Amino acid sequence: MKRRLLQLLFMMILGQASAQQQMTDLLVHYEADKGSLNRFYTIDNSPERRERLKTFNKDYLQQLAAVNFDALPAGARVDYVLLRRDLQEQLRVLDEETKEYNQLAPWFPLSDKIYLSEKERRRGEKQDAQALAATFREMALSLKEKSKQLTATGELDIHLLRRGDAIAKGLSEALHSVHTFYNGYDPLYTWWAPAPYKQLDSALKSYEAVWAEKIKTAPGSKDDGSGIVGHPIGRDELIRQLQLEMIPYSPEELIDIANKEFAFCDAEMLKASEEMGFGKDWHKAMEKVKNSYVPAGDQPEAMMKLYNESVSFLKENKLVTLPPLAEETWRMIMMTPERQLVNPFFTGGEEFSISYPTNDMEEADKMMSMRGNNPHFSRATVHHELLAGHALQEFMTNRYKTYRHFETPFWIEGWALYWEMLLWDKKFPQSPEDRIGMLFWRMHRCARIIFSLNYHLGKWTPQQCIDFLVDRVGHERANAIGEVRRSFVGGYSPLYQVAYMIGGLQFMALKRELVDSGKMTYQQYHDAILQENMLPVEMIRSILTDKPIAKDFKTTWRFYKL
Image 1 (cartoon, helix red, strand yellow):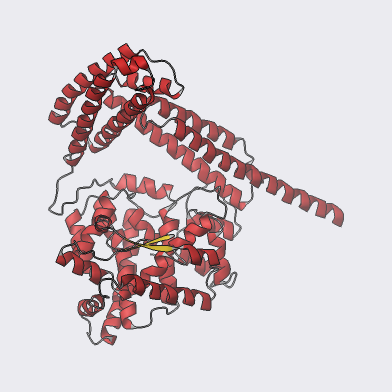
Image 2: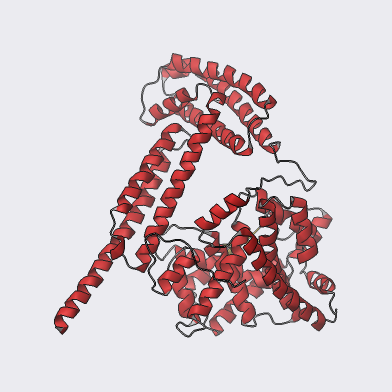
């Protein structure tokens, strides 16, 4: 009987291992196949590319449906649910592209002939050079007329304008691809096409410029005086994206969470202010902290000192495993003045980019940069950007479960912010000035939720967001402008700014469940997270607690009590 039970147990383990490998293989093949297709069908918004990707994603949904979900262990179930989510989302995006492309078809006459010539070029087919040259001339003339019509129209919304701009760019790329392949190599093409090509290339560039200008003046694009023009996505889209990110809270609830965390920061800020002798006037205390900046040229050395303190603290408290190679191979660069317009503070990863003034910046901007990057503020963020934050994340995701590609800012930024919270709890700040520096950043994360969601709900303007950062958090105005510009026109997703604090709170809630309960040590907990690669935190919870999710999984984890 005992032998029979052992055999059954062995067969069950073997079956789970086989099912796990099946999911791993599927993910590896999916990423490789997607890469092959994206390298072959390179023209964005072309009908050929779009239809091929639809077929591709539907095919993988069929392959996924053939997997025996009930035989999968917890980790493979997570992979199944997330791959299905991503495939369905890709199909939704492609359907949206189809709808918008069809609406815009009249604005791109003869585009089908350009797409066809690019398709034939990929396999070296002989072109009818005389006919192609005629197409180039005809399309160039048509686009000049369309440019006038586009300038005059006010019927296209921001989504169609962005799509039109992308289609125009894709056509330019297709045209260039054809010309560089045949010109100088094919005698007939070289005889007929160069002059018409130049006409069409010039017409497309001018047409692109009109689309770009229309985006700036699209409905809802009015400059409120801040110089920042974005486009709120609205409550319904916020909720859809929150569900996709597995965050079961409404935008209003997330703002309530931020305000509750803000109240904690306010109370702690007053304590630090009183210790510094400023009573309840924490703005004066923060002013003193800002003026602790180091001289120009000394910032790299100051950051290295903070890094060494941070890493020593991690090791002394046995908080996480730091691979020697991860410590060895991160490096510094200085951030350019152009990047500082959207990244007023340093950024990190394997490459640690230091934001500090350069000689050709205006005097006022120099001072705001130095004050905003003082050592007490930076104390909170060196470990956020390096170890055990982004640099360690980057190192580990390149080495563990590399078949997973479920990137989410709630893991990326949430993890780094979690370390700011944990080191606060572990008494890493050594003085009231240090505490003010760390509180500044925690207040900043709260503020990001409040201003970004209010903006996308249509309640706040960019200028109100800037003023809120200055008045409520204590930002230098130039830095506040940079933060808001980064949030709304920097290419980040609408939920990116929300993800810092909310992701951090998810990791804190899971820490209470696993570490505070005595089930894991800090080191075990942190190492386990990093070895699962990037996942929504609720999915990490399923794996670490060994509670397999259902096939029809819907996000339900209310990790924060309101």
